[in-house]
Image (tube, rainbow, N blue to C red):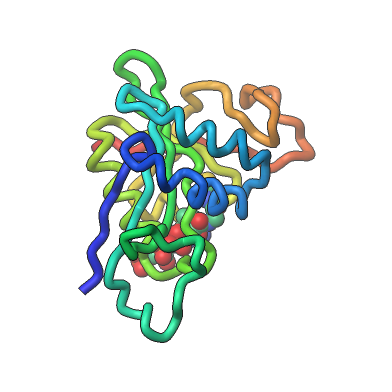
Length: 174
Ligand SMILES: CC(C)(COP(=O)(O)OP(=O)(O)OC[C@H]1O[C@@H](n2cnc3c(N)ncnc32)[C@H](O)[C@@H]1OP(=O)(O)O)[C@@H](O)C(=O)NCCC(=O)NCCS
């Protein structure tokens, strides 16, 4: 029976190199900067959450890449970063990613559910292409709550260049 655990990178600094590699496989940037971001995780936010699994049922047939295995034999499945929006507005989830080898198996849903349990607030997020995934998990389109960071540039929605994908904001009240 698979067991899933959500840990923070400030409690598990040993995971930072592997989680940085996982995130960078989706959104490449300096691996040192990515590791530094993960190492700066803090209970008072921003905080980096990592979904770990042990006893995955298909491990016998499909061994995970070695850089996704923790020293205690768990598999690193995904990451979600929780940002403060300041005051009572809620929190922002960003850098939501499941390891490519393990997508489409329900782990993204588990990651979001566990991150929501940890968040205990109104959760906001934004996306250019995963609106359907988040709506499937109970999120609803809402007004933007802050400027977005997209393509390495900070921009507000009304300044979104027309050539770039539109940033959609979503919200879920827990
Ligand atoms: C988006 C992502 C996190 C989803 O994780 P996943 O593990 O593949 O998703 P799951 O298998 O847990 O899917 C959960 C449910 O959402 C549905 N779903 C998954 N992706 C979907 C999509 N793109 N559109 C609509 N529904 C989707 C699944 O069918 C499943 O439905 P079910 O509960 O009825 O069976 C993953 O695909 C990923 O890491 N993508 C690359 C990074 C990325 O784009 N992140 C989002 C940035 S905004």
